[in-house]
Image (cartoon, rainbow, N blue to C red):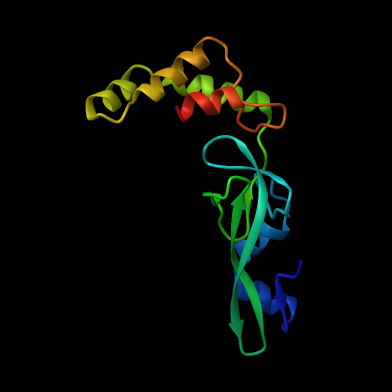
Length: 155
């Protein structure tokens, strides 16, 4: 995929910005530029398949650069961590399971009580916590949300 056209690499790098250029083309362990069909991590903590990509171009007198993109997940929603063409690398299934367990159990004292007091903690959150505490599997081998956990979340 071309990120720029009609200008030299030096000029494209200057217009995109050196730090962003290095994140896109350098060795970045946390994010990557996905292709259609790739797995990518999202802010919900699970992996999703990239279904579609819409690129945003910026025109210059002697060419253009791609300065941003909107990626769509398999369910039709957009990825929320997308910045300068990059998405999070996919999480491992073990990492997702541990993060979900730790989120519910490390936050149980102060955060959950504050959420209940403000009316933001719902019955769905209680069902999710019970499922995770009982050792339920929240994701499949690819790190995508499991059907059982999805049903509990959206019940």
